[in-house]
Length: 244
Image (cartoon, rainbow, N blue to C red):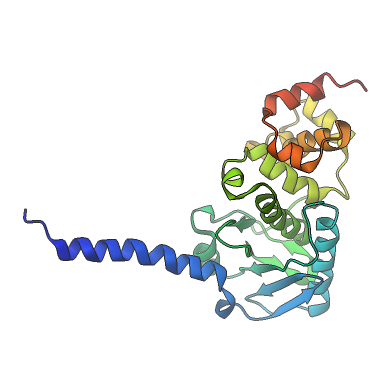
């Protein structure tokens, strides 16, 4: 078969153009969204109308949670985009379609959430039901933005290889901190409660517990937690041997 240089050039052009278009879309998604509201240094966009007062309150709650982290700066802008339409979710979530939210740091600092009832501070799961327990919309917003803060604190390459228990554990620690109960989570962990298995429950309580142990019990700094080479199993053993 004769080698066709024209086809090769077209193929290479497509392979180069598509990623660039996606990068542009993730960084400048505004034309595909309508209503927006801002509070503090956060802005919320949606493809459906929502009550501005309710939206502003959600952002204030998220900002209060983020402010507990030493990685947070009130001077940095963060933008959140709620994708209610299924096609927008498929467009922005790509292979992660179905999850609650996505953060593509370091390619963008914008974060994207699945369909939500902004007026009621609720995120709707794939089943059509509201997310369980304390995982309100402001929780998910704080969680996703914390990923950006984490990456900026330790560097792009370090963030890309950060173990899941640290990446998700710290994001959950920040977003859930006002209601997280260490002793309750520890009892569930020691009892092998299914909710402590992220693969089965979809919750990051196990990872949250590990991060909380290092930060609140061992008094490590956030930077130490994120950059020290320590295995998940080692922290779990610390918790098992911890005296009541």
